[in-house]
Amino acid sequence: MHPQKSFFRSFVVVILMCLAASLILRAARGAIAVPPVSFTSPADYTTGTLPFANATADFNGDHILDIAVVNYSSNNVSVLLGNGDGTFQPQRVYAVGTEPAAIVTADFNGDGVPDIAVADEIGRTIAVLINKADGTGTFKPAVLYPAGQAPRGIVAGSLRNNGIMDLVVANNLGGNVTVFLGKGDGTFQPGVNYNADVNPKSVTLGDFSNNGILDIACANHNTNDVSILMGNGDGTFKPAVNYPVGTDPRHVVTYDFNKDGKLDLATANGGESTVSILYGNGDGTFQPQVKYTASASPRWLAVADYNNDGQLDIATSNYDARNVSVLLGTGSSVAGDAFNAPTNYVVGNNPTGLVAGDFNGDGLPDIAVTVGGLPTSPNTIMAVLLDDPAAVSPTSVKFPAQVLGTPSAAQSVTLSNSAPNALAISGMAFSGAAAGEYSQTNTCGTSLSGNSSCTINITFTPKSINTRNAILTITDSAPGSTQTVAISGVGTAASFSPGSLTFAPQTVGTVSAPQTITMTDVSGNTALTLTGISITGTNASDFAQTHNCTGTLGPKKSCSINVTFKPSATGARTAAVSVTDSGGGSPQTIPLSGAGQ
View 1 (tube, one colour):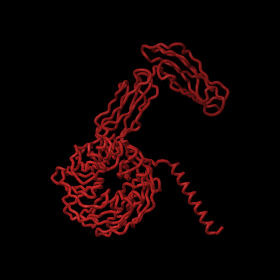
View 2: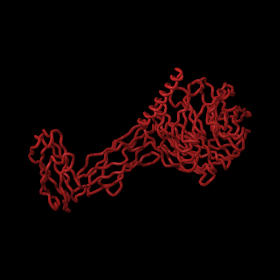
View 3: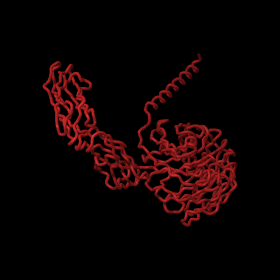
View 4: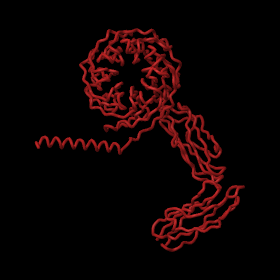
């Protein structure tokens, strides 16, 4: 065999072995530990028919985020003004072009108030709605501009670095993007087309070469790639360079995911269940994609730090799965480790447009998603999921058998606030059948600072035998309003003293002096029925017992169990006395230990 061919074949084998080892190590490592995130159940708001995409901005100047939604079948935009607590007012509707599919907000006329631009896919226009800027969050009638063939994606930015907002539109059937240069008064020059690849669905802007000039990235559905068009700084662009991504990319966004000062790309691959990450080199080029699993047919992306750990996370709307996935960023620079496996939240049929924003002012990003991508009911819904910063751990507490009327050792529950803002705590209370048998002390007070936690210590003092259940409810200002801890314990009337026996070192094969366990029925009015006393455990044969506990044990009465130790081998020897009775929590066990020598 030719030496070069032999070397090449060996080289390929080594590469494949390394790749396989990497995948095995990744599987063995599993998820990288990051702070968790939790969202409330979705709250639904009425929109127009077939809501398809959304955007968020403060339209009425009250420092509260509002949401605008494009409605594909009703040919209009719904504007829902925020109340500041995560809820929204009923929609106001504005007519636009035919079958709008994308939306962006920006200040197009330089008055400091966000306006709206929409891509009308079937109408082949863009619609611009100028904010009235009177504090009402209302808009002037839409002005339409001719666009390309089936405009499907839209983005705004200052392409000439003059502070004037321009628009870039991805033309689904044109194989190109259209650039509309703004005049600064809310109007735009005629569009200029630049070739991309086949069926561009989405477009974003970023400075990919770190030269202070915005460049274009658009996701091309039918060629499974992203086109990069480098900006010249005057609103014109160089020919496209294409980079492969997953199957049927539907949405593209740009962020610096690995914090190296270079913009990266992420695509939602609607033809498979993945998100592609392409790390930027800082010179306008990108590294090969790294894929992460989402759920079935991801359509939109919303990037934010959902768990407030300083790392960017990715949310996806999954058209075929009826849910939103959240992939938490780990901060790892190892390929395949940058995001953990998704957590999914059900939102309804065919979710599409997705946007993140702090809708309730707690400092954490929430999610709004349009629901109902097919023309079947219900298809007039926008769902809002609020990021819930309050969490308790553990969420359930179980106490072992506890003698009636005696307090247990405390068990601790941690209440955490992952938001940067303080969490107001208005109450803690027990409910349920045995609520009166539990008590708590805590370090939480009435306000829990941002990014902090406090401790709740729970004590069990049973009043009746057998299982005793309750719920601890913590009421606070988190979106979920309450956190709950399920509590259970077992009350018993059978008291044993001492609670364990330890024998001194004993020569192998010899019998120790007996030690006595006193069993007492602590109840005031019910006799215990005794059905069995035995030695159980690892070295049960090394211990023996005799007792005078037979039949029944009357209220407030006691009996004795005498235990001896005869080790069969050197070293530690363990077992337990097991007592079966009607006192609750049966069988009760009393640990035994000793050492053979």
